[in-house]
Length: 323
Image 1 (cartoon, rainbow, N blue to C red):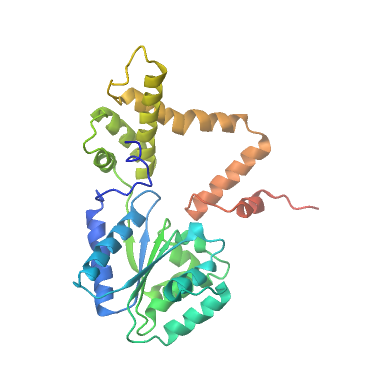
Image 2: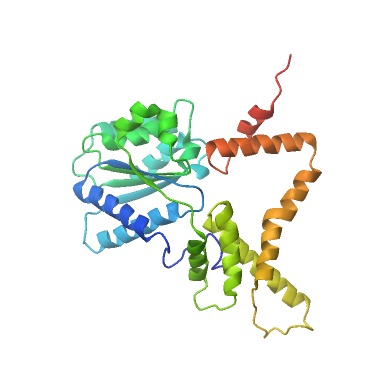
């Protein structure tokens, strides 16, 4: 049951993103069938179902393609968090297309040649660039290349860029360049508490252990802060763990056959544990340098709009120049 509440679990359905899913499917299907390149830019704060929606859309379209109901296409996913450097995205794409490994620099040249003079008989290629915020470089050549290639005649390249920041293209490429690239945009709003409650309940179908008030409490807490569905699932999973631990620590009060019941009290404890006590205590007991480091880290995260920051970026902020 705890596995169902884990953020890595793939649900059978994707609740509360039906409209967004339909839009992604429509845009991808149109581009694939017409063999026209395009770039779809999807933004929204973390935990709002962006990546899950795109993956669900691709699964649906691939099933249709395998059934002979639409044009075949090839899909590749590049995740910024899994790359050692942004330029590695070139070699990842080239290897996915040709099953050959080359350096990032060579892959960039080969891809430039491929999309400059593409073959007309090639299948459409859908490239999902997840965590786009992490592919930022000093010259922005990686992001520009992937946004520019779909606009080449007969490129058959469809790029789905997923980022946490709505105005990332404008900030990195200037308004003039970004407008020329003709991005198709979608923005995912944070989940409301009603939607978060529905998401949690969808993971618990057939398992009646949560009080309705407990799920609502967790959903309201999260929606007031971020609207991150992953955080709501974390709270509920932790509440289950706390109740299970209590049960097996007190065999005289409850036998193994006693069904678990997750009340609002258990959820309150999970919220306190995950959001308050440990974090606040650690900060309060930290040294001055540790607190300065955390402030620099928080500022960097807020500025970049992503929770994963390289250590060197924070070091640059906290370093003191020598006389």
